[in-house]
Image 1 (tube, rainbow, N blue to C red):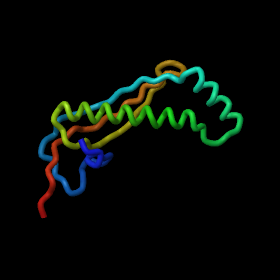
Image 2: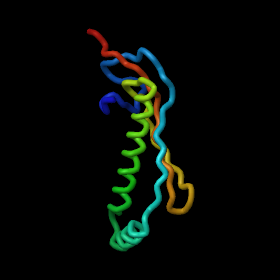
Image 3: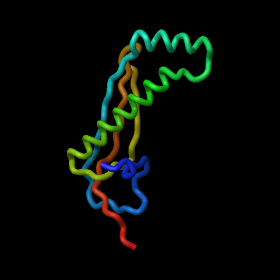
Image 4: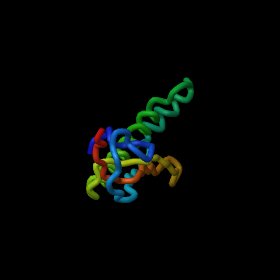
Length: 111
């Protein structure tokens, strides 16, 4: 599936929705390593962007997004609309990241 056919909106400009396949999701549960926790702790002493945690968050969101895309592909979707993220701390240092949206089949609009 083309990443350009995903949107937080409920439409994709230049395409019309021909079939709604329902909700798709990608779930990832991630914990920090002891090294990441120590490194992040040291970075908080300096202040500013905590790059170790920023990179971990970005990688986790990317993996959840890719899982959502694969779920959509298994249903036959060629696009996903209404994409959202949620996260929940399950245990201290253990976080669930959920990426979800609506899988659809779209066709290019004709002029």
